[in-house]
Image (tube, rainbow, N blue to C red; front, side, top):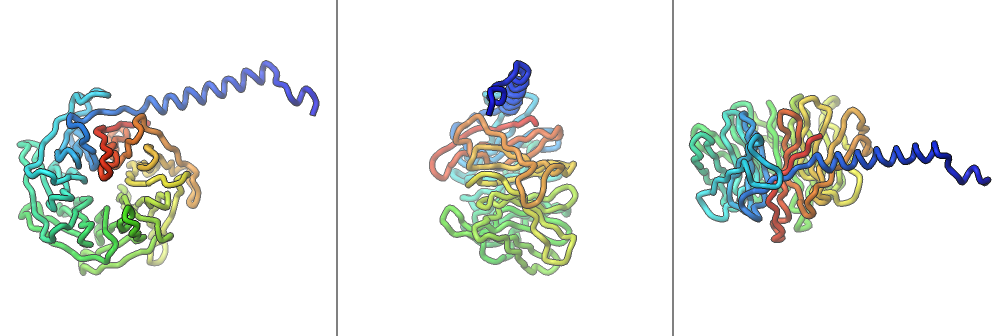
Amino acid sequence: MNKTDKTFSLTDKFFIGLVVSIALISNKANAESISEYITPTINSSPAGLDFDSEGNLWFAEINGNKIGKLTPSQAKPGTSQGIVEYELPHPNSKPQYLMVSSDNTIWFSEIEGNRIGRLNPASNKIQEYEIPTPNSEPHNLFESKDGMIWFTEFEANKIGRLDPKTGTILEFPVKEGHPHDLVVDNKYVWYTQGGKFWARKFANKIGYLQLNSNKVEEILIPPVKSVPHGMFLSSENVIWFTQFFANKISRLDFSKKSPPKVVNYHVPGKRMGVHDLVVDNNQQLVWFVANHKDSIGRLDLTKAEPGTSKGVQLFSLPTKGAHPSNLVLDKEGNVWFTEMGMYFRGKYQNKIGKLVP
């Protein structure tokens, strides 16, 4: 190799410097696009969250034993300004998952209290409903089109349905696998079954309960330790879910014969902890939580290819040990998420995050 091959001209150096500068600016912009808000209760470990129709963000504090409300127009990053909290009637109820129904009622599950709770935002009154099966450990909730509130019973291996008008709870047994998240369409209740992976008891199934017959069927999701976890029903009725241990974002493809085909998109890295996900209304972006990597991820479906990690980008959070749990989109497409920490190991967090794409 001659001397010319080893040296760079002034033009070359300028071009390289420009590229590096642009890359640094781009990375800095990504970092600055994330804001964090502090819950008034320290070590609160916020988890499930959802918006009401007025733009208020509601969230459950599993360790704080409270329901919180953040008003974005009043909130100030790095402070508790614009956040109010409502304490639950019973201590140690551990509210973890939360949703806002179509009438703006706040619904939440109490994993230790074995209750489903509702908060009336007009009166701030909290009402609770006992689940018939003891120690059922209710998890995620979903409102069906008829206004019923469905939820999973993780330890009982059941799906529950609560009638808001009567307060009556019906339970539907499913096959063992510890149902976690769920969605409801016109025919089925779909739910993830990932087992108790922290206890090395794995499951790899998507279950579905037929609404007209209560018949239960399952779809195996290889590999054995895939651990299907979060689930989301898009505005076009596409069922998406995460594979917590397999580092995948997946959807069910019903275009061919039954059973549906599982279409996978890979999240690069090891032990990412792909926890929760949400799809934007344009069906172009899938946002997800990389719990073990303190990151929020984005899958761009305009660039993605099944079976690969193309179109995937990760955004690191400012807080080390954040362990983000759940996420939701606001009307502008901003991503809001909870930083729960590892509360089951006594490592708590107390932040709500916002990512502006």
